[in-house]
Structure formats: C-alpha cells, structure tokens
Amino acid sequence: MNPAPNESPKAGLRSLPRNIWAVSLTSFFMDISSEMVINLLPLFLSNVLNVGTVVIGVIDGIAEMTASLLKVFSGWLSDRLRARKWLAVAGYGISALAKPFFYIASVWTVAIARWADRVGKGVRTAPRDALVADSIEDRQRGLAFGFHRAADTGGAVLGLVIALLIIWFTQSADIKLELGTFQTIVLISLIPAALAVISLALGAREVAVTGQRARPRITFKGLGKPFLVFMLIVGLFDLGNSSDAFLILRAQERGLSLIGILGMLITFNLVYTLISTPAGSLSDRIGRKRLIVGGWLIYAAIYLGFALANTGWHVWVLYVLYGVYYGLAYGTAKAMVADIVPAELRGTAYGTYNAVLGILDFPASAIAGLLWQGLGPWKGFGAPAPFFFGAALALAAAVLMLLWKPGSGERHSP
Image 1 (cartoon, helix red, strand yellow):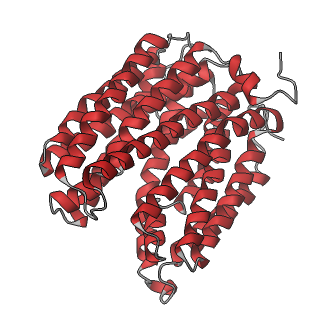
Image 2: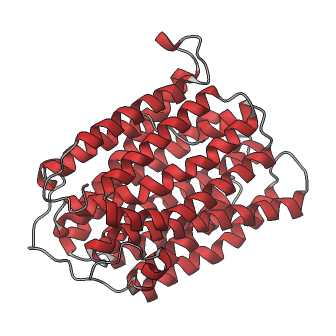
Image 3: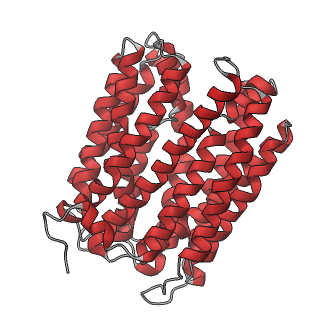
C-alpha cells in the first residue's frame, strides 16, 4: 500500500525492512572509521612524513581510479552471481583490514593501505546499492536510499567529532598534526570498522534477484537508452563538480581558520544527514526528477556564491547550505538508477554509475585546478573561476534533466 501523502519520515522508517537497517548501520560504522582517518591523511603525509603534494595527489588518484574500475566489475559480478550480500561484506572486510596499516609511519605502507581501502570500496559499493534496491518496494525506494545516506553521513559527523576531540586532548592548539595523535586515531578507528563488517555479515540477508536470468555485459547499450541518457546528463553535471578540496582551499583563502574549517565540515555533514531521509521520502511522492533538478539548481546558486564570496564566514555559510544539495540529490539519483534499469541488471548499473562519476572526478578536478590558476580564456579570474564553471554546468544539467522524458520505465517522473 502506498504511504499516505502526509506520512512522516519517522513513520515510514518503521516500515523499512531489516536489510535497509543493516546496510545503513554498516555504512554508519564504516564512515565513522573512515572519516577519522582519511580526512587527516594528507596532513599526516605532509606534516609527519614530509611528503610533497604531487606524491599525495598520485597516491589518492591511483586509489580512487582503482575503486572506480572495480565498481563496474563488482556490480557486474553481483548480477552474474545473482547475489549481493557477501560481495558487499568482502568489500567492507578489505577496508577494515587495511586500516591497521595506516598506523605504520611509512609512505609505502600508507599508499598500500589507502589503495586497499579503496579496493574495498570498489568491491562493496555496487552490490550494496543493488542490495538496498532489491530489498525495498519501489514506492519506498527514495526513503530507503535517503535513510542510508543519512546514516552514512551521520557516521561522518561522529567520525569528524571524535577526531577533533582526540586532536584537542592530545596536542592542544598545535598547528601541525603529530605522529602519536594520528596513530591514536587509527587505533580507535579499528573499532567501528570491525563493527561495520559484523553488522552487515550478521544483520543482512541475501535477497533473491527478480527478473529473468541474464548474462550481463558491461555496456551502456545493455542497460538501456534511459540509463544512457541519464548518465550523459549526470556526467555533464559531474564534470563541473570538482573535488571538495577546492572548497576547503577557498575557505582557507578567504581567511577561515583550521578550527573553523573543521566546524564547517561537521555542520555540513549534519545538514546532509538531517535532509537525506525526508528528501528521499519526498521523491517517492513527487518524483525523482524534481528533487534532482531542485538540488542541482541549489548547487548552481551555491557555487556562484563560492565564486563571489569575500570572507571566510561567507564560505562557511555556503558550505553548510551545500549539505542541502547533497541531501536532496545524491541519494535520490541512486534511487532513480533502480527505477530505469531491469532488476537483474541493477548491480551492473550501479557499478557503471559509480565508476563513471569516479572517473569524471579526475578531469573535473584537473579542470578546476587549471581554471584556478587562470589559464586560457579564464586568465585573470583566479580562484572564483572553477566555481563559475561548476555553476554553469550544473544549470545546464538541470535544464536537460527537466526536459528529459525517461518513459514508462521511470515510475516516479513528474
């Protein structure tokens, strides 16, 4: 039975099946662990190991590219095996086993640990998303993905707060990160990482994949025209969605302190957490397209604000509002993927979706870096240039999404 139009998100959450709660709890725990460590990793490499920015970029770039490619294969494999859970458990397990190696103060061990952590993410992401889609009826799909995003981001908030408290109590007001502090954070991060694996292994159940048995191929054609058009539009948007590191650099450039930046990140994740679940539920009632278009228009306005910001507090406020975009659009887009592809191909679709966005992150950030330096026709614009560029592409993508007619396969189009 369809939920009543005035049904509250809280009431809807009580009806979510066991798998949604298990996957969400797993993401909550893993994000606590990951946010504690990964956000401080560049500072550890720079402050403690004296590694240059080029090496830091190479380490992160290789890791993210590996994850992107694995997402496609892992999603395809989950469709081929018609099983999601244990691939997702394996992925979370790999990431958990990688965490202790961050403790060893060596560039090579950190690089290997970072790579292994991203391998785990590449293995788990598509099967996990497909498991969420398989475990919920289409009328509550937006709510399920919104709740999962809320749990994931809630873990990020708690992880950042724990890291901030450890830094506060171990090295007070020191500017640079110290080895002992980072190692303490790594050791504490092992606890939620282990709980994440246990939650999924014991809490989730395999769901029979509906639809005809197929031999999925990793091609856009096999996933259908609606998915291809959707990815073209999302890809255009993502090309202007550079790394959030540029937003942090913008905050620092406009005069925001280190403590201010950490507070900004925590508040952003809190806003993201609070909005994701009701936004997902809303998409079940009024349509995915409206939420995605609305989120992208907000993104365009915020990026225009980043370009025009004069002070650090301007950036702080804009970054907090940035959580509204994420809450509205991120989980909703994932729910829409399940709407427009056959159930037996969801793993391949989610793998392709995540991989394309992951691969586009590299040129998006490279373009942003070039624009920031004021090359070509953007000479003289400097730091605001990548934000003007991102706002323009977001606006173009929003218009295309609004005009797109997915057809009968998309059950929730307005």
